[in-house]
Length: 166
Image (cartoon, rainbow, N blue to C red; front, side, top):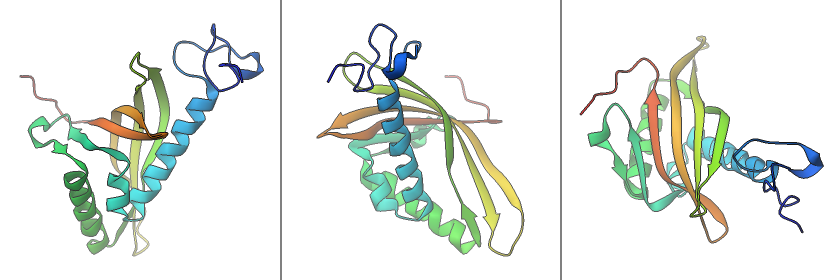
């Protein structure tokens, strides 16, 4: 199998002769989209421990507006995600995570830098209407371990929030 048929960019060419700019090929792009779809589903279904396992053992999750509150490690990430999900359930709200506009950049060390937009629509279980709870730009560094992708570092930059300057 050539690099091009495996989804990698070779001289700007990908399978089917399509030309892409810097980044990754269509096969890898689709693989990463599937990774994020699975990750969002785990979070939305309240499977916080499984969701946290999509991070590296020492993974970092931070909100850029509160860098001092970064969560480090699967246990901390999973505990916070579970507590957040439980609060939303108690409030009678269903929350979904919608990720799109992925921009993937391969790094020399084999990791990927991913920039994406994420929306969190929520709907009340009482039939109340849909609202967007958050709109963020997500910056991830993904690493492959034992043939699987994991988030090593995630930073969320929420729209409408001032980021402190140090």
